[in-house]
Length: 286
Image 1 (cartoon, one colour):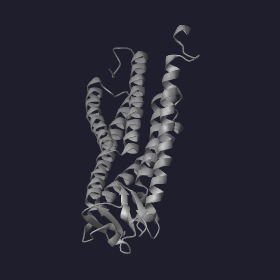
Image 2: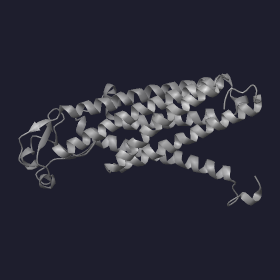
Image 3: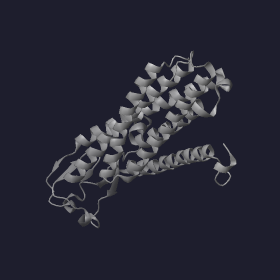
Image 4: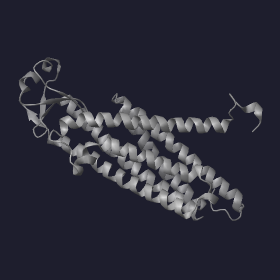
């Protein structure tokens, strides 16, 4: 690239990489925000403390986001940072072990999302006329999905709703409208997390086939179609979060879609480099 195409001393590729890694930093910030939200919520949903067995239920979002961030970095190392000729057996094993550990955590987080959604079914209709009638019976009220406040005589008048639902074991009060919103957001979490699991499985298949030189043009085309459909589902989930004004979830979902778009570009570039190295007749990638 000529010097004429530089901006502030950086060429287009450097700006591209800078934008990509800035995106990864934003995702890391989201992990911290999700941890703070999960930590605050556990004081209401796990009043007796969080045991090790309950950790993935209490901190499903944090564990999911953190594991995905590490896995994203492993894909970045594998598909872009480390050249093929420097990818030794030990390095490959380290990446595979870390990736496998992240995948296990992601699966456990997915099950945690499922548990959170199932817990919403434990709310039962209550006969309170106002939230103030629930003071002393319900210790908290649902302000948002996974966001709660202590219910007191001082703030109960500000809690609005017509029909009320009570989660007896967690002692949490929710209006009918809020409970429906919580169910919608909880189900979106489940669908989103499950779809991401499928994305990483297909992407890992791409990487393994690429490593072994078995990624034929036909297979590559099929995986592109499959991932396009999965990314469409993820984009629809992001749009739905935006529609429900769940802004952090909407923002985070867009960051992840863009981040994995970069991984897809890395994989495409890797394929192009392999084709250039092996020659058009021997290449098995488009």
